[in-house]
Length: 414
Length: 147
Image 1 (tube, rainbow over the protein chains, first blue to last red):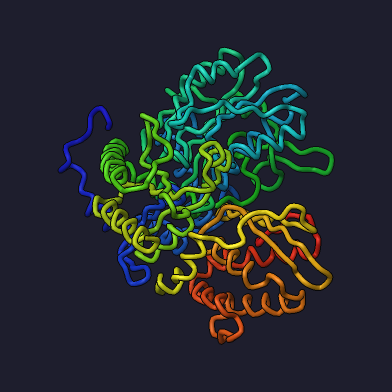
Image 2: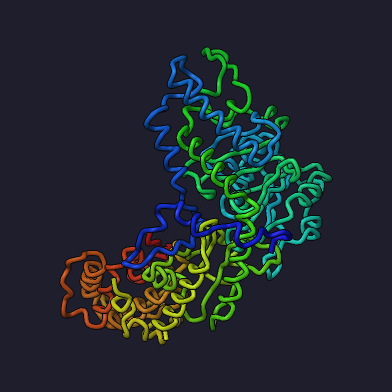
């Protein structure tokens, strides 16, 4: 539990639930119980309306025209950048780069920061619980440069101990890249302490914040990392838009990643002058409506209060963990003391894929599979898990529906 | 959609007690099948006698549909001619994928798989073993994917 949860009455989950139109639909004739927000969260009506209004009233290309619509679209796009900046307390909007999402943000750093700098034998340090999006870009750059990818091991709870991080950082470590919150296990990593260890050895730190930003306060001034990546669609915003927040000094020294419009000042066939930050990294027409939706999602989170959302989800995590633990044959994978509201589990005698189908027939949407974290599955020696994940709109009744659907699964396979 | 259509008694039984489970040693040919979506993994070993599939075994891990499908397939194809097996595969494929396909009478137990077509995301689970067997029969050592 959070140290200072708000009184239960302060958070009206029924009202929050009603803000999300999709949650009222049925699936296979049963009320939808959406427990897959860690894969992609749903959007409140306010986000849908903001995107709709932009499309209907304000759309034009940004940073280009002198006409009214272009000015409006540019103002909305840049307002979104400022909303992102204040939301995570980034130093300046110059370091807030819009991307297609967390994956693209990490690839940007791998290709533009790491690739020109890494030498054969240099080390990129990850952790054992990373999402594929924070593994594969580093493997690609390692192949390109001769650098090595290493992973800090975790323990049976899914905890990455600081001592283990310290033991794996050495004078060859150039980059430490880790999740803030594990998507498969829910583990919260001590990223500030990891950043301090890395900085003490001269390495830069990238944090994959996709699973953290929607669930807990993220203050980049305190986290001390060099790059922080996240996606709008996991925080009640649209798909196809995300952010890389980087230290200006590092970004300034990095070459552009992609070439095109918007990222240049002047072009001739002999010489091109690149635009300043953040535009240097935003080649081509950006996802303007996505940025507008992301800003609306941040407004929504701010209106609820991220600390209230955190307290609500932590309470659900506690209730769900207690109830799931009592289900015969159920094992929870990932039991870190500091956990986000994500519960991976297996049920004896029922493959997660079968479980997913049976739960779906009951209207209960959970993720089943390897969660794009195959090394994690291998570590726990399971082919896959089922995963229930909670969001601001999740209710106690969703947990009860999950427990009933699990009983149904046991009945089918009895 | 009815779960009872998918998880019929015969499927649950073959999942719990898979037939012809294991590995032939020595074998004439073998193949691996992998469904990356759910992590199903199959290994099929075969002994062939000219045009006839004399014996086979499967082993691996997977969901109930993939295990039961492999188990029922092994029972159905053991001792059959290649041509008969190809014919059976076609019939199973039709039954799995075509919503309105009639279920041929000669399918026997395999007819139990017809419920899978109401669950499109599960079709690959049921067809993985057939693709893997095909690969083994073609003496291909390559890993087969259902993607």
